[in-house]
Image (cartoon, rainbow, N blue to C red; front, side):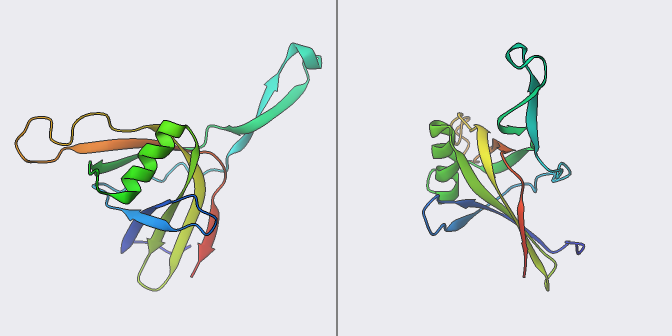
Length: 145
């Protein structure tokens, strides 16, 4: 893997059959330290004689805070809000480039929380920072170009 110092782009998928990803204008690049593989959740239950039982879903993928300026005309923010309301996973991409190599990390995420405050709550004309909290729901697919 290269040292990526030039560029980071966060993209949100539209969920269509031939998925199109839209870049989201970020105020801050999220911390991507929690890049461990998602683990299948194991549970011990009385109905299985206290043996391990695996359930559907993944346990504790990383949660990211995606900080933006709230904009109701931004298509990527609309997709995140819709996924939050529907409580469905949405495919997202982290695109890293150093000017010659581009790596794309793609995975489904659950939108845990979406901004609910007004765009300009104090009326001074300066749009405030808003946060979408998203949680990885599966392992990343990694492509390099």
